[in-house]
Each structure stands twice: as structure tokens, then as C-alpha cells.
Amino acid sequence: MTECNQATFRFAAHFSRRVEAGFTAGQVSSDGGALLLRQVDGRIRLLDRLTGCFSDGRDPERIEHPVGEMLAQRIYGLALGYEDLNDHEQLRSDPLMAVLSGKPDLEEPLAGKSTLNRLELSGRTLRYHKISYSAEAIDQLLVDIYLESQATAPQRMVLDLDATDVPIYGHQPQRFFHGYYDSYCYLPLYIFAGDQLLRVRLRPSNQDASAGAVEEVRCLVEQIRRRWPKVNIVLRADSGFCREALMGWCEAHQVDYLFGLQRNQRLCRIIGAQMHQAYLQHQTTGKAARLFAEFEYRTHKSWSRARRVIAKAEYLDKGQNPRFVVTSLPAEQWLAQDLYEKLYCARGEMENRIKEQMCLFADRLSTDEMKGNQLRLYFSALAYTLVEALRRLALKGTEWAEAQVDTIRLKLFKIGAIVRISVRRIVLQMSSAYPWKHLYAHTFQVLRC
Image (cartoon, rainbow, N blue to C red; front, side, top):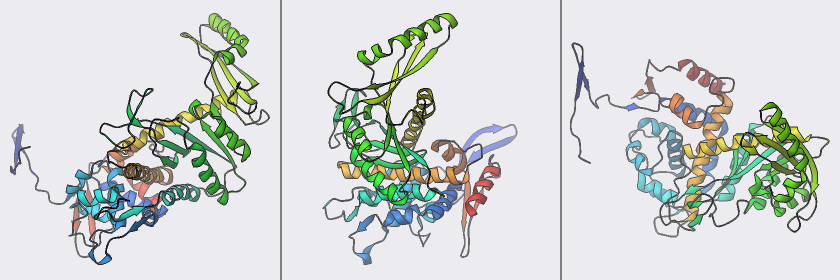
């Protein structure tokens, strides 16, 4: 790309006035709303505790960029929409980013792309890679943030499990082709409680969607029950997690489950009468018809016992649409229709939460080690945790209460601001034309309280 030294750009005139532009405003930021994220972090203490999950083997007398400063720089950068380390070659001189990162001397630059890259390649034994992290500590931190967000122990909590594809385009480690997604990809496992992310685990795609789920759920349940010993925990997932190992573990540890069940000819025969009745209703009314049934069901080989199955016998304009779920929840607590429509179908919201991870660049997994890619996945998860805390703590009851991450970023963080630094003050002069001043003021007041 040709280097541009032009100082002034002259555009078409506006009636009798000339229209000119130039990069002459001095220290101007496009992220004037980012200080709200800093305020949120002061409430949940995410970045301070995250620093404790890392060990730094560098010589303390030669450290120019502390680990905590680099972590803040990277996670705030993701939350603000800067996906690549290359972006930080310019951001390292941004005084607002220095404020967010906790840099004492605002005249000094932040870490550059090479330094941040060495952070992301944690755990290597090479000469310049002396920073490592504990995955177990980060896992516990994500759960602690959730537990602390609840004023009292809930009577019941639902854990949503799902796997998604992250396409890979190079020759990253454990690269496999996945037939369902028709691409080379990773298959990370996500576990949410409502909107809050509790676990993210990077996995290769040459395995079942439920691989490792028992181990991840065991650790989660143990940590949750240390705080809330009497809480009723329900696992909810699609048919990819309907496996004997996971259901058997739940039954042995007083954890309920509600999983989709892949349909087969035997299941469809069982609800043949209900499906015929739905067909007759559809022929009479011309509208979609659905009926519900429940029964005890056991597979010929894979299940160790009979379990409660709920069936939806639905007939649409395009034909039959039977659906099945298997659950440990008793009929006395949940009628068949309510269980399916009110509890199981609510898991669709998890799809939106996973999409938000991609808005925070969770698909940028291009390092040549799984541990480095897992760390990048953690960074996106932590950036999501920060933005979700803002939504939960400050935007509740507003028009952005259910806004997704990219909407909040665009409307609340991307505010043009002139940054003025003096001996005693750092002042952001934000655009007077910003259309959502009232919501910015509301968010600030809530977080300040």
C-alpha cells in the first residue's frame, strides 16, 4: 500500500463552502464509551483476578509490560472490536487504551503485536516465552463470576451445553475434516447458565459432540455445590449430548437432564396414533397441528435403563415433524407440553450467546499449538463476560437490555471523543451529536452506584 503523506483532503464543495478533511485533530478516540467497561471491571474485578491465573517467569527488573496490563489491553481490544494483534501497533499509542489497561505513564506506549503474541503463545519452552497460564484457574474464575452475580442461591439452575464449529484454514494442530459442517474445523464445547458463560473448551472435531462433557460438568457441579449445596441443577442440550455416559452420571449425582433424542423408526411407530390425529387436525383446520405424548423408552443396547421420553407429534404444511426429548424430570413437576415448549425450547437462546462469541472473534484460532488457541478462546470468553456484566448490571430495564454484543459495541462504545491529558486530569470530550446520551448517562449512574 502506498504511504500517504497528504495533509489535507478536499472534497466536493457544499454550496459556497469548501469541504476539507485532515488528520490534524490530535488525540482523538473512536471508543469514548469504553470507560463504561472499565467501570464494570471495577465492579466484578475480572481482570485483576485473571492476572492471578498467569505465572510470569520474566526477570522483574527487565519487564516493560506487566502481564495484567497486557491482558487488559487484549481483552478490552476484543470487546471494542479489534480482532488482530496487528491492530495494537496503532492502539499501543492510544491514550484511552492506556487508561483502560492501567498504564501509569500515558506517554509510554503499550505492548506491541510481538509482545502480545508471546503472551498468546503461553506455555512454550522457547527463550522468549516465559509466561504461562492455568486453565483450571480461568475455568474457576468464570464460574466464580457467575456465583457472585446471584444475590441468593437459586432454587434451580439450568446449564446449557452445546458444541459449535470454528473453521480453520491453515495447518493448525489436530486439524480434521467434519462431515456435518463440511469443513476443517475445531469443535469447542460451551456451557452457559442463562446469558453467563461458565465454560469453554477447545476440542478437535474428530470426536462426538459430547466428548469430555462428563468431566466438564463434574467440575462445574462440584464448584457450584460448594457454594450452593441444595440447588437443583438441570442439564439441557440437543441430541448430540444424549449419551449413556452423561445421563448415567447425572442420575448417579442427583443432577437432572433434558436432552433432545434423535428420532428413529421405533420412536415414530410409538406415536403413530398421535401423528395420525395431528394429520387429521391439519386437514380440518389447514393450520399446523401438534399433540404431545410421553412414555418409558429404552434402547436395545446403548441405554442401561428405561427413561421418560416426551414426544411432539406435529404435522405442518410440509408434512410430519416429530420431535423427542428424554428427561429425568418427573411428570409431577413438568407436564409433557410444558416441559417441551417452556423448558426445552428455551435452549434456543444459547445459539444467540454462541453467535456473540464470534462477534468477539472466538474463531481466530490460528496459532500452531492447541494451548495457544485455547487461550485465544478464553480471551474472547472473558471479553464476553465483561460486556455481559455491563448488560446485566447497567442495561437492565432499558431498550438495550437484550442487545447483542456487537450492537452494544456499536451504539455504546463507539463514541468519537477528543482525549485531553493534563497533570491532574484526563478529559474525554465526546461528540455532542451522540444520539444515545440518555442511555450513556443511565449506564454511568447505575455503575457508579
